[in-house]
Amino acid sequence: MAAALIVLAAGQGSRMKSERPKVLHEVAGAPLLRHALLSGAALEPVRTVVVVGHGGEAVETALRGFDEDAVVAVQTEQRGTAHAVAQARGALEGFDGDAFVLYGDTPFIEGETLQRMAEARAAGADVVVLGFEAADPMRYGRLVTDGDRLERIVEFKDATEAERAIRLCNSGVMACDAATMFSLIAEVGDDNASGEFYLTDLPALAAKRGLSARVVVCDESETLGVNTRMDLAAAEAAFQRRARAAAMENGATLVDPATVHFAFDTHLGRDVVVEPHVVFGPGVTVESGATIRAFSHLEGAHVSEACVVGPYARLRPGTELDRGAKVGNFVEVKAAQVDEGAKINHLSYVGDAHVGAHANVGAGTITCNYDGVGKHRTTIGAHAFIGSNTMLVAPVAVGDEAMTGSGSVVTRDVPDGALALSRARQENKDGMARRLMAKLRAAKEAR
Image 1 (cartoon, rainbow, N blue to C red):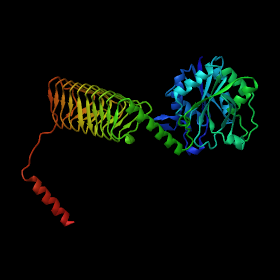
Image 2 (spheres, rainbow, N blue to C red; image 1 turned 90 degrees about the vertical axis):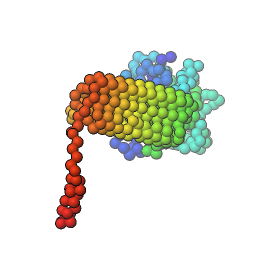
Image 3 (cartoon, one colour; image 1 turned 180 degrees about the horizontal axis):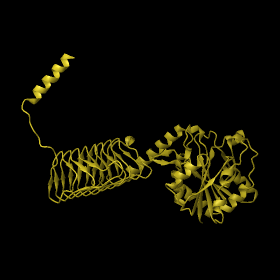
Image 4 (cartoon, rainbow, N blue to C red; image 1 turned 180 degrees about the vertical axis):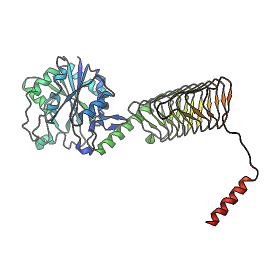
């Protein structure tokens, strides 16, 4: 059965105390909304509708950065979850399949859980609700069941004491045939303690039609919602615990796991070693056998087998390290291809560049890539040797097996095998240092 996602992202999130829409606050380098869509991707949806409200333009702009195909529907006034879902009706006109309602501030629903909901639909349940056994039910809606049949969902405000004693709680996630869902929503009223149109009314309305409703149960940790800054921090911590455990289960070594921070899409191969206090930003892949040493920061980078990065290294977006390359302490690399076996070991900046195989870039080398208006490219050939404190003023190329003398400012291409020297001739003035210091001291005493 074809699937569509309806992701609710219209809430103001006033408890976040932020000008930014709640669903755009980030966990592991990605907006909460993106996490929700990644969960839904397990269903291979043919349509995705994101319902926006507060800060809708900002949400739509961000959405285009990671899902160009999603359709945006606007909820101009917040009148409850059923009202929010109803805004997606137009975008799903003509759709024949199941609609899954997800939430932009609930980032951790597992794709496998959504698959189990789809299986329950395929097995004959007309409405499927995702529930969880709460350690502390608090103010969650309660799922009232009869055996494996879901009779109704009761919001906490409307629940009796007996209903509040139920520990099976509502996550809000729901699946139903799209046409049936919108038909049921048309019957939802606002005669309740909040005066809102609740999506939770659907199971009871379905029962009146003789339709069946079932509950699929997941772990409570999947249903963690983010409403406050404390919730956001808790979500980040939960993500990091899972990511660290998964990395180690897949064969990576984390020397001090609690100090390593992953992004939502970090990939580590087997036998990767990650030392303490390493931060992975979005878009990083580290291949098998590489070592990431302490206090390094990587983002948008690909690190091949047997590379060594750090300590105190920064890899910025567009960095490609080929097998066995080394990037050492206090080195920054950006938008650069570093070929097999090349070394950039100390105190250097290499940006918008290509470093050839087995080249050696000496300490303090800088590719001067920016002229104040545009960026320019530097090419360093295979087996080249760049002397310490060389300034490579781009655009410039240093040929294969060429060298630059330490302290040189290189502004012209260096042919293969050539030595480039560009520095003032040294002159020694005998006794000048003593005479100069004496003069300076005398001037100071005279003041």
